[in-house]
Image 1 (cartoon, helix red, strand yellow):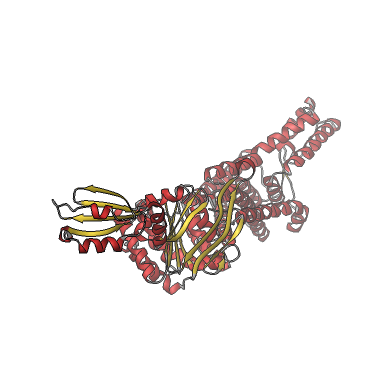
Image 2 (cartoon, chains in turn brown, green):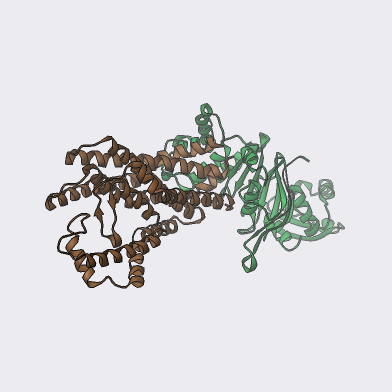
Length: 324
Length: 315
């Protein structure tokens, strides 16, 4: 049974690896990653500050680019995986062979895993390597391990979107419909949900106190330093209390977003603790890898369960659907 | 009679409630082995649904279907291992060459790796595309794609070939080649089932036929049986050709008991009779003094349009 799946996977892999679509996405990712690491180091130079762990700083910047590119890669590989075969009539030819329907889905998945793995690993390592050479940064063994973990979770994120888009593709007769739905979901998770969370936060807590904003403006210059001299402790507490509540509401709403869970993991991995309502702060110390993995266990589970759910759904829809 | 395909009370319903469509309505069909079986019906009559059920692409709502002795719902993979199918509305991977497409499909057909290329080239040669083996399918015309479709069905050298609208898009020359191919396959002992909405195709190559309309099988049997049953109802027709410029007396023929109608035009006399009177007509003419004026006496088979109309009106 798997023999046929591997035959399909081999063909799919060759088709994808030689497609312009894949090279375009990988190229854009590489370009954005390197450009963003440049802008990060430039902002440090202007601010006259030293990053605590320069490699983590660079990887963190690459991770924020990856948060956008990995889903797009998954969608690009899956949106026409089944619906495209259906549109072109090649599904009829495939299903007229002595194979099981599962072979078709398995073949697509095996190929996608290989392509996603290869693309993300190669482009991440290329971005990191180029950045290291450009910024002349020292790399420790711990940095390498963190980058490897980051690559694994980026593959999982991309595969999560692949699984979702594949699911849409299994019941869609037109690839354009499948693409629109998949991109719509990505936009919702990546952009709209955070806007919604801001609206809900303000609706629940009301606008932040005017004085609290003034406090924030005075303290934001210092990374992680909320005890700026000259700011009364009561005002600081008022501000922090508001922000803590806002962060709680925001995290509850964004828990529905797969992107959010990925960002939580990569932020912890590279020592970037996102502040409430999008204002961030850089932690002075970076937690050890085991600590990151244990504190982010829920995020990891969600990230892994999401694609599994949609893969199972894809199998169910495709094997039950009758192709005339 | 050994059967290649047998269906029993086959029903297929699409949708439910108000949108329910009964695509197949209690189909009992028997396709004898080593026959060329034509499944004729207008567009939307249920031909493709029936074929899809036979190869396990669709599940019947009720009833059963057996293909080469295998149950179509339980052993569809075994069926597809033995059946070469040309589905309707199929496509190929345009970015690949004809040979690459067929080699890939041969892999899925389970053909050993050392034979794939050889089989693919042979199939391409059979359909007259060997010289285009290395051309990308994107450069193929519709007719060439259709021929490539036939080639992929031949890859595994199947016992049974099922062609769904095989000559759609093929030029007359290609259609004639296809008919020759079907005859050759049949001579090799293969069973060929083809669905078509073109009546003349059934008459030209089929040994057996069935007419399907609105999901119901109106009639099935050997082509001779179908002719015979129409003749029995509509009468037997004979044509006498006489030498140009000559005429023969018709009184004797008109007085024969079963003759219903005689029409004459130019050097042709058409006789419609209630019963089969071929031998008595032959005897009458050969013994008559005007026998030298007669060039030929032939029975006129009912046309497939007549057969279809006959069964459409209730047979």
